[in-house]
Image 1 (cartoon, rainbow, N blue to C red):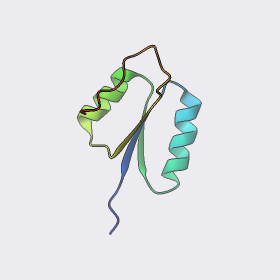
Image 2: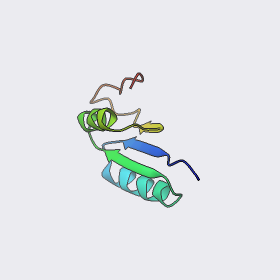
Image 3: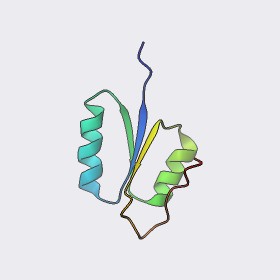
Image 4: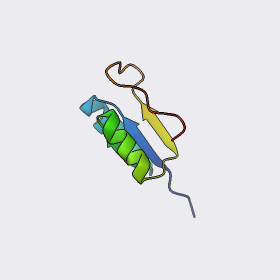
Length: 68
């Protein structure tokens, strides 16, 4: 049985999140999206993720702490 992989996409670009999430889901992965740093942090506290994809160019907010 294949282990379910959960991915978080954190980006303020709605279309990027939607299209990327749809593409990744089509490959059988579980995907959550967050459009703000606060939303991403709340999801990280609520769920365990195997991979986090974050917009590194977003200078409006601080980066997610890699210790999560």
